[in-house]
Amino acid sequence: MGKTIRVAGLAMALVLGLAGVVYAAPSEIRIGVALEPPVLDPTAGAAEAIDIVVYQNVFEGLTQIDQNGAVQPDLAESWTISADGLTYTFKLQADVTFHDGTSFDADDVKYSFDRIKAPDSLNAHKEFFADIESVTVVDPLTVEIKLAKPSGQFLFDIGRGDAVIVAPESSANNATDPIGTGPFSFVRWDKGSRVVLERYEPYWGKKAALSKATYVFISDTAAMTNALLAGDIDGTNNFSAEALDVFKADPRFKILVGTTEGETLLSTNNKKPPFDNLKVRQAMAHAIDRKALIDGVTYGYGVPIGSHFAPHHPYYVDLTNTYPYDPELSKALLAEAGYPDGFSATLKLPPVAYARIGGQIIASQFAAIGIKLELINVEWAQWLEDVYANHDFDLTIVSHVEPFDIGNYANPNYYFGYDNPDFQALIETLNGTTDEVKRKVLAIEAQTILAQDAVNGYLFELPQIGVWNAKIEGQWQNAPIEGVVLKDVHWVD
Image (cartoon, rainbow, N blue to C red; front, side, top):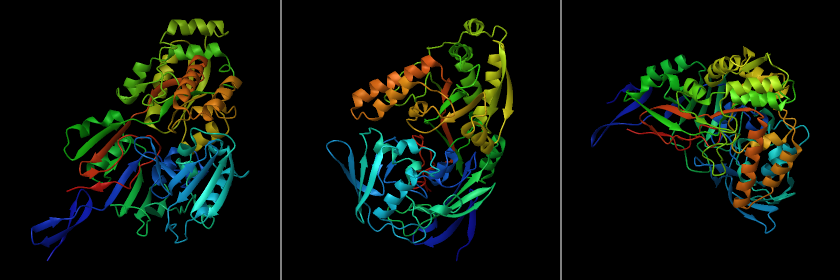
């Protein structure tokens, strides 16, 4: 004799055994996330929100990035590298299937990389894979990739969401009906509401403990707080710091504070006057009070940065004093640049708290030196179109969450509009260097150039603050790459 009860909003079975009454741990989870992805294909969009849902859950790559930021095998069980560093031979996992039942083999790997490099590719970061010279199928479980030049980042880059393996039978529909090889298969996407995943029972690797995962889109902090307290969701990976107090003394919850790869920037259109003037950019840099910004936006959880690099990375150098807070010097630099009375500009803000709140603080700080900012709130899709794609902006605030993405500054067509041939040559050398000591020296030089050129306003490293049901284990505390990885998440009694 038994019955069904509700605990933390999830159904749990009541089972009678020899030892008495045993409650089975829940096998479903509902996760609140701030942004809805524009598509569900990580190889066809730049938005972090895509990987939050599907990376290592629905889709997998030859390699994967673990929670410490290290490269691990995934669909490739092993690999060898030629002495000249140009040829990688991957041995693939056997008995892998896509979620539609089709088999995975070396042909799918070749198709996936050929698709990334195709002229009509929608991949947001084709530059990561530009040095792939050829992909050759050796046999069904062996594939050879040849590079035009050595790359110290290659194994990491093919572990990104941009390089997950897709099948020719289903790739055309992955934007709305994603089919991968991961531990969870896609069930449905209720636009504006949620994405539902279910455990893929024929999965080739370790079976996930969760039978079902639902990503619920909640952009408002108050609504996220209420959903957590009511048990409508079981956790969120990235919560706003200003509302944490309600959970700190509540034993039903635990708070996980970790690091991210999110360099939060006052992104600047370097091709557009007056921002093409170095003195103007230096004036803005001196006008930013990072401490006030970090206290106001992250309640002290953010880490100040002086260039585009994560503070936890071994290559990091502290450049926060390159342009220390000095409003009077800002005014002098503006006068030297021909703007003694300042100027007016727009600041486009996507729908995340750090941008909207940060925009108000930056506007106040800039007003003190004569720069008058018009704050324009935009939805994420509009930001991607106006700012990222069409470069129609003066200033914006956004966190760049991709790991080791300093190379974006070597692309003059990237939305920053930064065109420095010396920096481009430096990044080319860095990318082709495999010696770790030399790579660190080059990376520090690259950070220093960006800081001195004040390409953007370098504000702080975005923290990851998770709020979870206290009975959930296995979630990542840190975010070395975009994603809420589910494979080790489980409930405990």
